[in-house]
Length: 467
Image (tube, rainbow, N blue to C red; front, side):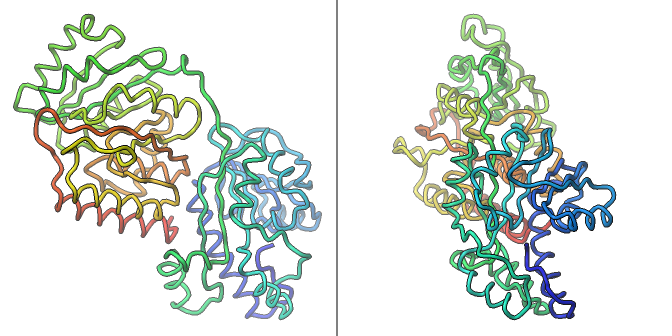
């Protein structure tokens, strides 16, 4: 197990304590407090207790470990059993295998056994040693700083990703932590918090953490859809949007949230709503709301809170992303390909004058940056079209205080919130059109500075595991 000490010397105890502190912080960041947690290979039960679960179940094959953990943490449930034949039933939010896969004879078989314990929202959390640290760990064992263990399965990230897929799971993300496992006052924390996350150095960290999930399909005809359009001075685009939004699932409603337009946008929406049967009989209804304040982020949140659909969609009022493309997003969500479906405008060629060169360049740069920050691939963070289940949006909303009210666009509130909860991000390529009516709302330099600020916020949260 994790850097277990064989003696009672102060140096050995400090070494293990620092390792555990870093590992526990990373796991607390990834697993929300109050989750239903199963830990396979629980050993002392310290990690399970640190996660503060609403239901905590620990399984270990050592009777001595189970008795010790039960005495230390009487509010948790500890069961004697083997990973290959788990003696539990039910559904858990999080299943943890911490530094266990290196000891298993058949990793795939153990992962397959987890299937019956997983629901649509279950996440598998696997921690293991970076194979590059193999020689150093052997030295630590010989010096007595770590409990001796038989030869490990020194799995590489791609090996574990493949084993997850063979067992019917898929990786959500892979991250690393702990470049300096020795507790040097101030120095270790600075290196581990701010240098270890950097590219190249991150590949040298001792701990590798993989998050996996079981993809679940949903019956498309059982889902209803709400399409939210935040608009301001977009009168000339309204009828085209109304005409083009298709029916998705058992019904589709269209919600406009107006940001105090002065060109008659609200009146145009009301006119189209009164003529809905002729313009688009596939729509269930059209509703219009007026913002109390300003900003797209607030408009989206107002629309989502009022939405009746199971599936929530954002469609930009400039209609540069065509409403006819929305079924691609709906299908990706319903088929279980992802849980936060984000559009990307940077795959197909752009229509002439659809995006300025500096905007295009900045989007590419920020895409690379946020892929690194969130540990999931994102090529176009500012594409306005985003789709997710309302049930998942409610989880993001309930966890919003973690990041604070920081995002006037609404895009990063959703992306950060989804990534924090380890939802699977998925991108759908779309063809981006030039605006037909009205003026662009993006202010390149002012909004560029905001993006840099949000990048710094993402680093401070996602790369230092601040809970």
